[in-house]
Image (cartoon, rainbow over the protein chains, first blue to last red):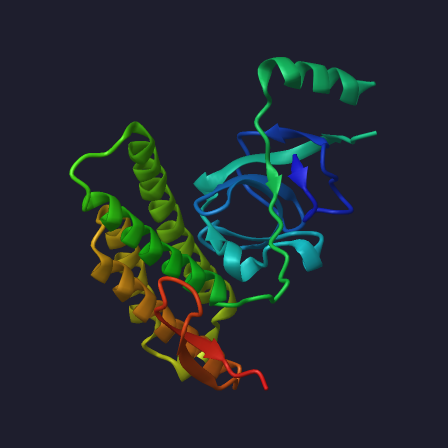
Amino acid sequence: MTGESMLPSFRDGDYVLLWCWPKRFRVGQCVVVDHPDFGIIIKRVKQVNADLSLVLHGDNAKHSTNSERLGRLEKNAVVGLVIGKVGCP
Amino acid sequence: MLHKLLSLVDSVVAVPQAQAHCDIPCKIYDPQTAQIAALSVIRFMDLIAELAAKDSLTVAEQATLARLVAEKETHAEKAKHEVRVIWGDYFKQPQFEQFPDIHQLVHSIMLAGSACKQGVERDKGEKLLTLINQFADAFWATKNVATFTAKCPYLPEEPVVYPKLQ
């Protein structure tokens, strides 16, 4: 992964392991999504709506695109749920 | 160790990258870059017209023509991009309420910018500049900055809306 909007949880250069067949999501989990405007991005789940769509945000609020601009993401936009990390040394 | 191993694998199979997308709200917005890009488009159109007036072109002039066309299109796209960023990132509900027609104006700028890419007629460039000047006027009004219109002090010497900062 690249970028700094998920600091301090994820740093530029970290590798993340994804589970690509998640059935449900919980607030606080990290996901990789294919965003229509921003492409493949990694964000944290801020809200799970009744229709299972997601509202996301970055950990590094100062340097992350805010939830309003990210918009509501359909479940099928999720590439995978982050289940592991290999940190950059 | 594991990271090194993954880096090695990555260099061979190119693992897909996820971006922790960063959009720093630096709050630096200025329509001047769009206005300069539009002026450049007009200038390139003028230079293309100069070449068009010749009976035949040398190889060097053909190369110049190719560069002028490429730069015209690049700057038309840049003008569109700069306006889109201000409209998308700076304008919010209070500004939309102040200028409810701004969406229509931005859409007109997008169309005018595309027309400049498609053609070489000067009036298309002038239209793009006129619309971007209107956009600049609205932008500065949202900041309570008065504006004035003056001919830019360089070619193509077209009218430009400037902020009155004193």
